[in-house]
Image 1 (cartoon, rainbow, N blue to C red):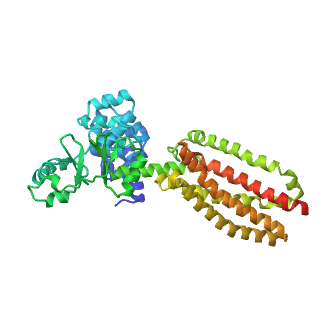
Image 2: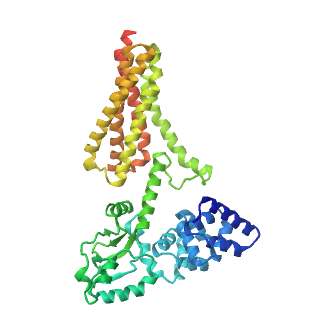
Image 3: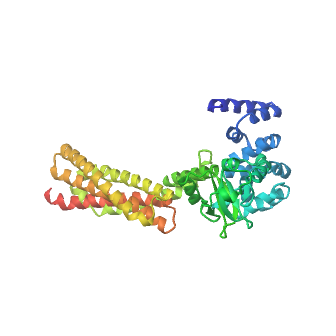
Length: 451
């Protein structure tokens, strides 16, 4: 097993071999690695070196590397290759991976490469579906059984097909019109009487999904029912292909990464430390400008209370506590709500229940923190009413934070806007603005007349 240290050492050895123009040694080092490690080493090499090295590798290893690279890098590498080299490598790729790669390449180059691919018939149908749907995730169903064949015939068919199949989790059963009618396990086929027909022992209750279902909903369905493979059908129940669990894991990882970036105000999920500062600036700056604009709302609210602040400057000391605590609570609620929406646990249908729960949590947190903050203000400044004002303001702000943390992302979900994209800016604005408004309003009513 290779750990990170081994990979770094091998990378240095590969670089030294390339410096010495010992291509055979470089190929040997790369081919000795597992596919994910091959991709890690390959990504660290200069583009020109990648283009020279990839065709020298065993086509299966080259295919593994392209499959392991993220989409953008794989496309860049593929478009630098000679057409013959690209076709030879794509021949070794899984049909769904090949379709994803060709679908994102320049159309003319993809067409040329496709014309030289041996298994083009398996790839062409997959190019018809959008990447963000179940059809875009599926691969060809490698082992399909007809409902009327016997167990013995099924075993013979499996022996013929299985050597070329990547994985066989379930055996899906179709009728004369290739409509999905059932599913059996390999064990069931092996253990059945050799003369028994598949229809006699198959399970007719098959969980399937339509080809145009969103890929995130597809991944949730597979996770919900612990499926290793999910058949994809059309509107008339024809079997189109199969989605395997590794595709589901990739979708969930992609969605989690995208939500994390967007919650941090980085809308482009491709941004990473390897991207140029200019690209990162273009991605982040607009959201910071938007945040500046929304922060001005808080400034306007504060301007309404200039006299209050001028007469009782001690109020300003507690601004960070009142706004900061509610802001943290709003972020907590927002994170839980966005996650719930992403996993299908929260929806407009049960939104009221989610809001009630978060308001009760906000009330409980507010009572505890309000008392603590009020005591701090009392002990520190020796003014009971000041402690009361700060404590009550903190209580009300935490309730407001729970409200905003649910209503904002849920409202965006309803109007078809990604809740993770702009919710952080809006929730921060609401909690800060309401925090200042509640705090200074209470202070104006309770304190100003006494000092």
